[in-house]
Length: 427
Image (tube, rainbow, N blue to C red; front, top):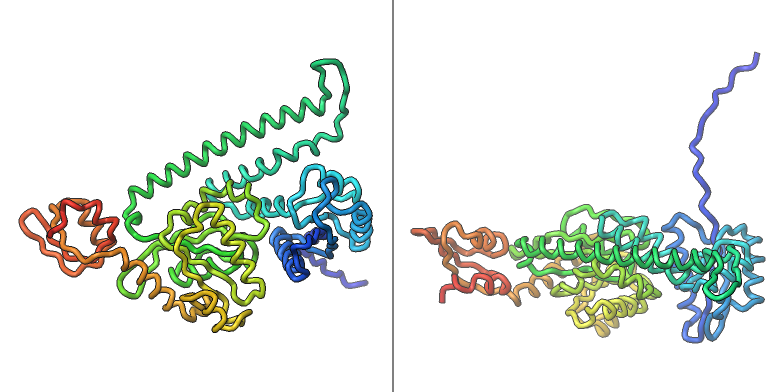
């Protein structure tokens, strides 16, 4: 009698979807730039759980209006996709409805463009109500000009005056519904922003300087926030893993503290529509006293990354903000020598958020910025005044003397707070 064999059950992990990437290289793009852009697209796909099995690039003055690639090249895309077993096509640019429809028709495969991939990643990582609203808004704004391709299967009837085909009627209906949804989402986001602004006015934090971490996606901003605050902001090795803004109180060596905000990472080819949808998230950047511009100095493309960040800062109205350049990941090596880097970016800070190397230099720089807007003063407040607690929380207290109905305090306090308590300042 044969021994009974014990059956073992294994969890079956679904195979990652295979994607073929396509891109148009214009005369303005070098081979290195297009290679890096496709590599970035591969990382975006990986963040979504897909795998890029190959890529095809065509050099053209500009993408064709109808089918992005030339007609013959689209045939090559189909052949290569079949050879590699690709299930999807991913374009490294934002495509029009016509381009999407043409490529899908010619290849027989579903097509996603760079913008829709980024929106999908945003949707994956949105956790707060505001983040989810912004993702939904971005999705609808993206869909609106592309509604046409959803109804190409419907019959287009031609008739007399006032008669329309069912496809056209449905298209108009959907366009109206989407416009209404976009309007409602904008109204909801405005309410959320006002509520947050009101909460900010009620918090003593409003008197503390706000510093915002900005930079290219995956530059190490969340790692730096964790290192400086001792918190545990979620970190993943992927793009756009920080979507909702995170703010932490940072204790500094000289008995000062500030608020440090982490923000969504920027990226090249980030469509203007997406920036508009996420303006609420980026408000902390605009309201910041100083921007901490974090850059992965181990990446040979770090200067292009900095340019992409500057472009987005212009779009949101923060181009003139003071900034401290932070070149991160020096533990991985540097793509430029330290001498050249400091010549190009005077007063920059080179550090490793992972190991903590030179973090103290950044803390001292932040503290020196804070002290510019703080004054040593004497104030006399009536006992029971809420300003007493505020002063204790945000000030560097040297002495306090409690007397008959009043308390005399000597402290270093922010100028913004002194404006609020002007009548209580002692000359």
